[in-house]
Image (cartoon, rainbow, N blue to C red; front, top):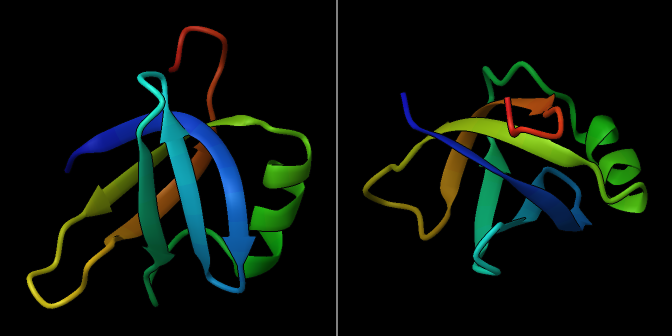
Length: 77
């Protein structure tokens, strides 16, 4: 499954925007079977934490569906 690393810049309920290292922003939605909870997203935004998101791209949604959101270390791992 693909992964992306970046900073959580916007959070609204179970949706969030991740800005990658190239400055490109991506829309994610937490999947219903996600290993993250909506309440965990706002603190990540407030601290501007670097995170690693494992996701998939569904055909019927504009954004990507996050399967997991983990704090990344300085190297992005």
